[in-house]
Image 1 (spheres, rainbow, N blue to C red):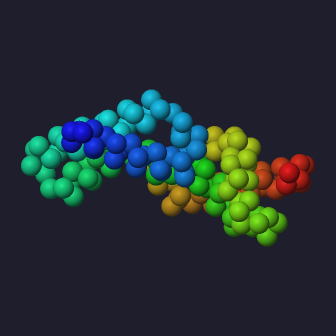
Image 2 (cartoon, rainbow, N blue to C red):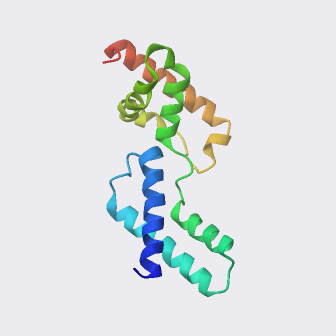
Amino acid sequence: MDTQQKDLSYFRLRLQELLNSSFPEKAHDQKFIEQRSSWAANAYEGAFQSGNSIEQCNKIANYILFEGLHFSKFDTVFQVVCNEFDTIMADEELRPFALKMFPVCEPVFTNYQLTDDFAYGYEFDLLYTEITGAIAIWVEENGLQ
């Protein structure tokens, strides 16, 4: 296996891991995964051939690989479920319940300008409160099922 293939596999696996845990809505988008992984591998190789340090090459490749993937809507829903609804279900039910609530909460996100650093702004608290309310209403109407 040549170096380019190894790099591509490495970047693909790193991206897939992030998508599986924080961006389930993108986890099966093979075109996105292949394209982003390829771009990152090419950027790494180009940076390396230009004489950059390994650390700098990694930084450049990671920037491309994870661009736009720093704020996760799913992680936000999961955080709300873990913090606000953990007393009404077992720990092992939290992630599956968050996955179920993700589409329920999706419309709430449309009211916000989501950027990579959104979680550090004052509007995040408003979003958190709205998501908590959306989930509470859903549980009240549907139970935990």
